[in-house]
Amino acid sequence: MHAHGAHGYSHGPGHSHGHAHATSRVLRISLGVTAVYIALLVVAGIRAHSLALLSEAAHNLSDLLALLLSLVAVYLEGRPPSATKTYGYRRAGVLAALVNSASLVLVSFLIFFEAFRRVQHPEHVRAGLMMWVAAAGVVMNGAIALLLWRSGNDVNVRSAVLHEVGDTVSTAAVIFGGWAILWTGQYWIDSALSFGIGALILWSSFGILRETLNILLEGTPRGMNLDEIERAVRAIAGVSDVHDLHVWSIGSENHALSAHVKISDMQTSESDAILREINEKLGRSFGIQHTTIQLEHEVCETAHACVIAVREEGR
Image (tube, rainbow, N blue to C red):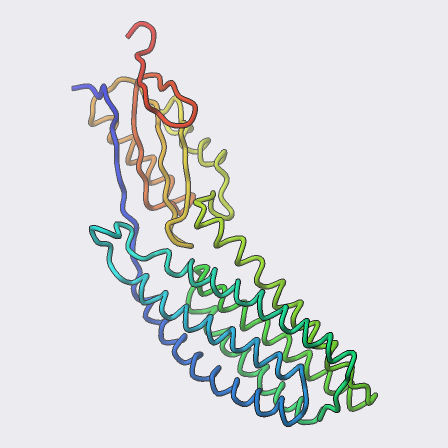
């Protein structure tokens, strides 16, 4: 028996619920700690007349939103596929990361505006209180960032980690700024710190924005090269051509591939062996676990997708 038409194969994605449960627990703990620290920052910022502390409160409020959205996304991503959501809710985390990073851009511009106003009209800052509250923030944000980093590596969790790392760095800068105010008596340092915090927030958001938009636009996943994938498939014995190759992400850590692969006219059992080898290589070398591959032994005439199969000369 020979395979004369298109031959397809689909390999479903694997699931890992243990990581999701651990991530969810870390996110819940982080939410509670962050909420308490935001209240502390607001009270201390008002009492110390420090825009830097209030900027940190805004920064941490965006973190609170980030953590909340991440928690919701982890729950949604764990829901199984259905007849109407055949991939499940794997892009919920990507959408959460997009909202997080977009909110950070808005927060940064609000900080720039207020810092510019404060430069023109400096206010007396209680630098000692400013330093103690910032020191508590360094410890808290550093601990949360470490816990999140150890709990998962998808784009949603990484966006939350970036928030926390950014907070750790910016609160450390507030400590040095408070010391500089105590030493020099120059209150404009508080506004300068706020500009720096705003710039850090803006920078940290752009990388996540680019990656989430690339996933939503079904671009080639970060770190993957189509030419390398094509060469790897072509190197398999029995494969003579690869075309109409597409690779995209279902979620940040769940990649999919579709392709047309040309082989010789052979028994179905032989073509199945080639198909298994292709999928094993894609999974092992590129982390692609969901594939739809059409095997064909006829010439495929098209620019972008196979719509007409034409028999080769002599067939």
